[in-house]
Length: 260
Image (cartoon, rainbow, N blue to C red; front, side, top):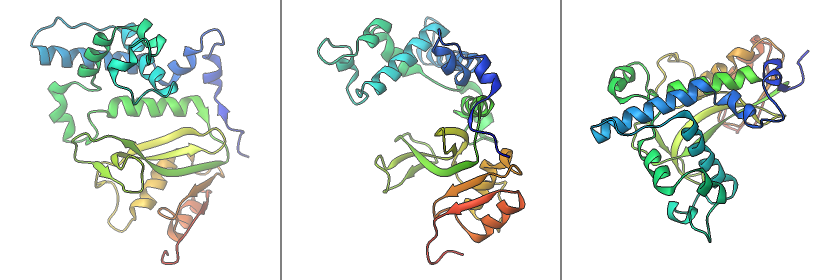
């Protein structure tokens, strides 16, 4: 019998009502924050050709708080100049750090160290972000148990960054960005697994559909537990339904008239 979705015992033990940030810290933990801090400092030293730039964990967390504040107040589209003004600004941003300091951190912000990037790119197309992404997804899985129903779909994260796997999707509001395949718990709307689309996956067999491969990868840790997967017509197929049934998982999805 499938358990009710919700936080795991580990998450419950480590979230404290008097410290709301403790919940956030379970997902973006010390490893992630320290890693981003180290990579950002390394990039600053590389660009400036000296070691005058410094950044600590507390200041990076203040930087992230500013990013959150811009989003929750609906002012993410405002220019940095306006965010710090008396008329249009967000008070939290002004109290967290100066505009100039925020701009400098944003300029150097990185999620990997450039000096060994080329070597890592030989085996990992997502090397610029994979260490942080994989750790974050692992934390999501550690802190939450999904219920009986899981939804799988794609999401386009808006960006016009110059990279080999930037996607153009006319049906999406932003149209340009990096696409990720995501599995989400239906009840909690919570991410339980995900990975980016970075082009051809060498682990996929030649006779396997991309959509089938994606679903089976996302559900790998939840096989044989009697769950149901909901998908749209891009993913749904008789073959996928058969594969999932062999793993004691059912499939609910839309189909079109030409699909097998």
